[in-house]
Image 1 (cartoon, rainbow, N blue to C red):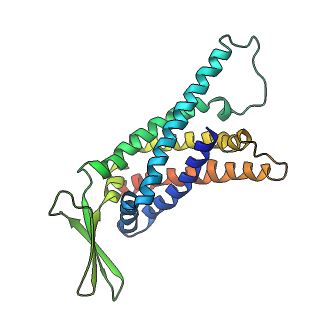
Image 2 (image 1 turned 60 degrees about the vertical axis):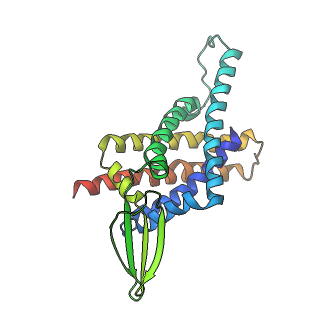
Image 3 (image 1 turned 90 degrees about the vertical axis):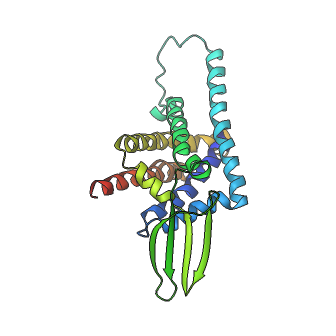
Length: 244
C-alpha cells in the first residue's frame, strides 16, 4: 500500500505538470503534442502500464486489509474511540472508493477514447518558422490508423495530431461532470493528507528532524496545490464554455 501509494503520488506531480499545458493560449498545440508523446514513447508507455497495475494493486490490497481488519475484530468496540485520529484517516476506504470510480470514468473518457476509439478529432497546426506564428484548423486523416505527422513546406512547419484538447474542452461543458471532477479532487486532497505521511510511517521512514518536512509536503503539495491545480481545469473550461 505504501509503495504503490508513493508511486502514484509521483505520477500526480508529472500528470499535473503536463495538464497545466491546457492553460496555454495555443488552441491545444502543446497539450496535444504532450498527449501524443505519452502514448507513443515506449519507455513512457511501460511506466504507464506500471501505473495502471499500481492502481489495481493499491485498490485490491486496501480491500484485503479492510477484510482482514474486520475478521480480526468482528464485534465493534464497546466504547467509542476518542483517539485524535483525523477524519481522513478514518474514511480512507470511502475516499479511495470515490477515487477509484473517478479513475475508471476519467480513463474511459480520455485515455481509452484517445487510444482505442475514433471519437477524438484531429487538428492541423501550421507554424511560420520566420515569425513563429501558429494557426490551427480541423484535419481529416486519409487513413484510419493515422496518429501524427510533422513536415515542413515553404518554411512552414505542419503538425497533424489527435486533438485531445477538444475532447477535454467538450467534456468540461457538462456541469455534472465538472461537479463530480471537483468532488473527486476533494477526495484526492483528504486521501493524500493522511496517505502521504502514513506511507512514510509504514515504511519506517520516520525521523524527528525530517517528519515535519514530510507533513508539510503532504499537506501543502499533495493536499492543497495538486488537487486545486486539477480542480481548476474543469472549472475554468466550464466557465469559458458559458461565455461562448
